[in-house]
Length: 174
Image: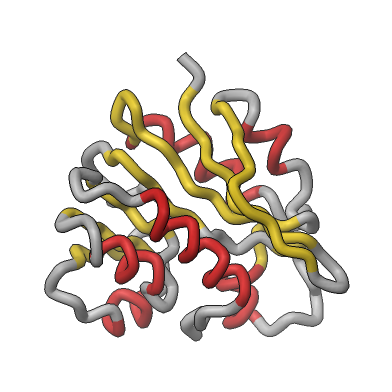
């Protein structure tokens, strides 16, 4: 199952349009439908899309975008000026089917994948690199986790009946 663009995708896309520079080397982690990679490739000529789901990589057949089949950074090489991540961020729901859980569930608390990503991302950012991270009020202690190694600035938020979603810009604290 490919996670199709939804409200979270569109909120992040709006910020991607504002933040991508033509000189940026961009990584779209967990590309899913490819919406962020495609948006970034409208400005930057150096975009790489990564996903753990081979169906996502096959479907994103765009000559302007390099693709990597990988679980987070396991097979990603190099450093990037901008890393985009709309991760699975919901807490585990035992009733959710396994195929959709791959795209939506971030672990028992919802923040485990985000935490693993943030621990690995540092090694893949250039000196002035930045991360655009989408997360939810249901994602556990995302801000607290991020602030241990990164400066943290919320650029956008949107409220729904049951949650709030945020886009934050992170930079490594030096």
